[in-house]
Structures are given as structure tokens and as C-alpha cells.
Length: 257
Image 1 (spheres, rainbow, N blue to C red):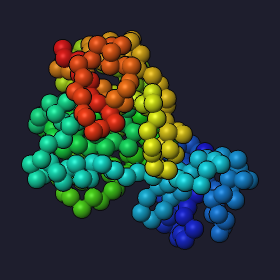
Image 2: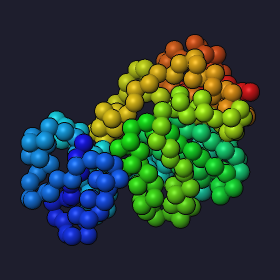
Image 3: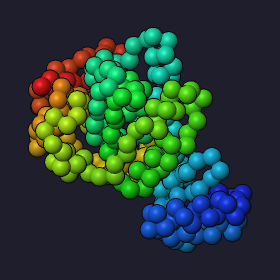
């Protein structure tokens, strides 16, 4: 991995890129009017581009970057503000003041909704194993302006931990979170945007194993919730009670304590 600036840059952005390079222990490469693809042809590596409004992560050999965007959290929170329901919140039964451990943070859409639901008195911790994804998502959660004050506050409250979920769960005390949540890579792929495809290139493809689930049940005070493809074998394999959604490609499974 190396880091550079956007094509149109200035001294301030260059200094930011150099500072981030030190934080991530990676190489800063001066842009010098070169395209990202041209630099990658020389360095044969993935690249983070520091722009004025966002960070972009370019996988080597691909033209579409990954960047932070709250995705579905935008319209979901707008619906919640209007008093409408959300399937994720129905499955997790989150209320103000509750604590949530999201073991598969990704772009954090569900964690943002969770943070909105549990409020200032609650806590949401999200786990991301890849240090570069963790860095970009953490930056996005703190810098993205959704235009909705409640949502901006919810994003900033999320605590992002760069770690492997299995190891993090083992380190936690019994009943330390009300809800433990999993949204692993689906066993059966669905149509995705180019940005999500770029995310999947860097994300840790770790299956939900029995040992991890047992630790999740130990750590949870109330329930463990799984979001998965409607044809996933994991629901039956691990004994989840499934909330079936007729028109959706994914269901929610619940293990109550």
C-alpha cells in the first residue's frame, strides 16, 4: 500500500497525506501529475488517494476505488425520524442506552443505525480487521456530513476497533454487550456496486464458526443477531430463529440468551 494526493492538490493536502502515511506506516508517493493507474503500474501496489472531501482506496489492477459512504443508513435514519420502522432494529430490539458489538463493520451502515437508536447513553463498537479499511471508515465516520445532525452525531459516537472479531470476542468479559451482531459475506453473492466490490477485495472473508458464535453468546447479555442471505445454511446450522422477509434477499436470525 502507498498513499498520494488527488490530482489537484496543495501543500496542506500533501502534509495531510504525509501524516497519514506515518500513521499507517506506508510510503508517500508524490503525485506529480501522474494518474493513479500510472503510479500503480510502477509500484505494483494498492493506493490510498487523499482528496479534499474524502479518502479513496484503489485496489491494484482495478479502476474503481473504495470510499466511505453511509449508504442505506441515510434513508433508513430519515425513515426513523419520521417514525417508520427498520428491520434491523426490529431484529436487534435496540433501545436508548443499550450496547452493541458489530463484529463485521464494513461500511458501518447498520452500526450507524444502531448508534442512532441507542443514543448518547448507549455504545456501539465496530470491528474491522483490515487496517486500511478501518482507517478510511473511521475517517469517514468522523468527517462525513450527511446534512442530518442526529446522524452526524451517531456516526461520530461509533467506536471503531481494528482487530479480528474472533480474537476481540475472546478478550471480552461475559455479558459485556447487550447485542452482538454479525453481517458476514453472504455464502451466495448478490449484485453489488463497484464500490462494494472494491470493499470485498480488502475485507476479511472469515466464515462464522461455531467457536466464534459460542464466544458471541457468552459476550451478549440479550441476543446474538445474524444478517444473512435468505438461502444461507448458517441459520439452520446454528439454530437461529429466523425473521423471514418475503421481498428481501436477506433475513435476520436471532439467538436469545
